[in-house]
Image (tube, rainbow, N blue to C red; front, side, top):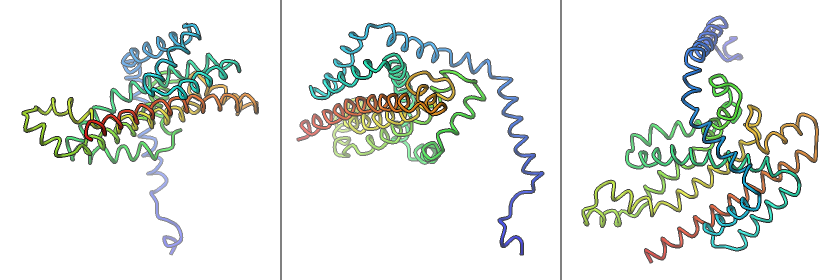
Length: 295
């Protein structure tokens, strides 16, 4: 009756053999192809370094102006612009400017990569139910897996550094933009698509001129969620060498520096609020524009 009280499992020797085989195979793959993988990701490293250099080497007044201009163009709301500038000024006064610029540059690169890979994947899912059925379980796993687990294969393949952390952040943050791109395109009114067909639009023309513009508010919501998830991963990614506001927070945790952790944590919150308000305002503007067009 032991099986009734204890859950039956694999023999210890067999389980140990399976684990050893998988681990040894992964190590062998890393030794054989590690250099090739690092060379493959060199353009990504260059992109990240150049983005970071631009943010750090540009005078802070110009950075403030660029962020204020971006916030205005996206939101057309002076309250959001003033709030964004004020938040960055407070961050700078408390000597967190450089780490903030590193974090913003990383989030920018992560967002670009998420859009570059997530948007086409979402479009493919919207055009094929089979593709959707294949990708959805993968996204479910990506969204439920503990964030620390993402670091294990990336570090084993590429070691400690910015690029492994960046890849882990992108993998963690990309599901929302894929899901909401698929959802936004599928929710486009069928009558509008029939009208496009009646005018002789090709599949590409229908996607470019009808489906994507109408789905853009939903896609923007996906981008917003991707940015929020990337910021949530900042502290965890700092464990494998990603520079920015996450490293002081990690140092504060290890050394019990209360104020250092709180100030840098609040700076991360401030950046998250800026990104959230600006992207949401842009999404609302797109939504109102669509309602006016179809009203």
